[in-house]
Length: 285
Image (cartoon, rainbow, N blue to C red; front, side):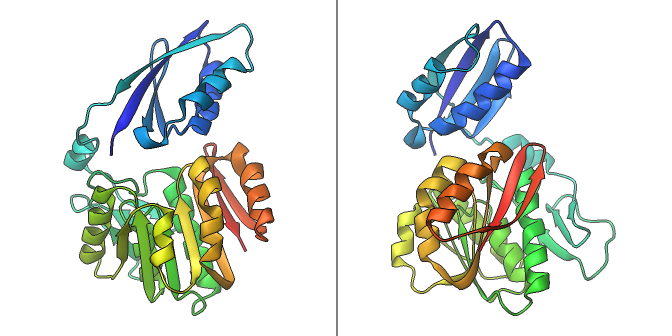
């Protein structure tokens, strides 16, 4: 997928202004930021970038004595995971019940009852190294423990590497369908499902592909940015069976009220939440 690289200069520079800018710029579609000497460098998918919304955010920036300017360039179209793919990552243990690893760094020892997931990420998001992925995995562990036979059909929205769908299948689901707007992610999900010996069906497209998916699901999960969650939540809701759960992550803790308000308009209520380093995960029923 194509990205814009947007460089923000903040004058006078302050860490508080940087943090606030990163949170507010998420409303314009930004996914990630890097710190620079002058401020921030943000990355946003070209098809999701809302420049007018960004300008509105800066016009009403809460620090009146701070000036924020920015420049937009096309990000280099390269393998963003190349260095990560070469180095891999150390095994990640979730709740002492799940271990996530790559093919280079195998767990040295763990209880055989622990769920083991191998992830080979190729230009796709979701390895367990990010707080949001870990929190969703922890939520899945809790859900399948409390309802060992009540979660059969699972929907993974924005599947990335396929890690969440694979986790659900290993925990006891009988069917998982996923989708992603990125063809690389669809291929990567299929690949990772094979190496984990489970079956996940990934579809290419956005939430509109759900119109072609028959039936409803016992569990729907989405680890995507806040704006996409707000936009697509009605479509998630339409695929939920009676008594189904919806797990959402990919947003900041201070976004929870906005998401739960949208959920309430769809007759969904908050039943649990997790927070880690400013990131959040919520469970809706």
